[in-house]
Image: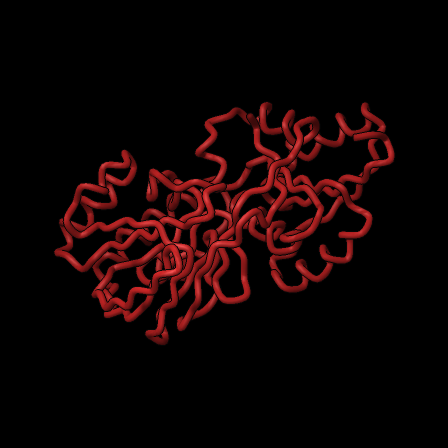
Length: 291
């Protein structure tokens, strides 16, 4: 990459002040041309604005959390634009699987080559990490307007409250794996499709998820008494929930939820209600990994 390369710095204005300053200094030192774009909170307006940069941009550096990275993925999926991440959000679940320092992420964003990784897609929206229906979407909906330094604690509190309030749904869905379609009906607390391993501020929801295997991990948590659901959530921080009877995890390439009016979240953003078609998009994003 040379001095003609244009970088785009995509940043969350409430989360990335120190990191943005550090990136600016290094780009100036390298004589790299760059532009800056702050997220506004209006997903579709930001998406349209970012897509206008595709012809003249080599690399985007997303400074923020999973939501900022989700925006970048939706803007630059299936393009030649490379997407790098400097995690500085409240959850940073997608970044958690690499266990790298902030400085290592910054170094990677400036110097490492990109690799094609998979994305998930739910209806017309891409996701990098995890999307789901049911309980997790209800928690996101209850906490989505809470920002700032206490956002993570509020999310945890909403999660506990919602276990009392949320009634598991009888979901009708069909899955596709290796061209084989299987129809199912299950009463579930939630069902998640995972591209990354971590979720909800540190839960290792899908321990075997792989961003380059052409599959999504389908994580189903079935209806159970309150204490057993609390147990499942606690054990998930240690990837130990997988041995519980109400938890089932299996790889899928496509999943179609037929039941209507169940909430959907993608990368921690509430995006609507079912019916929904989830699918893996193999090699859809050129992502810069800190390895």
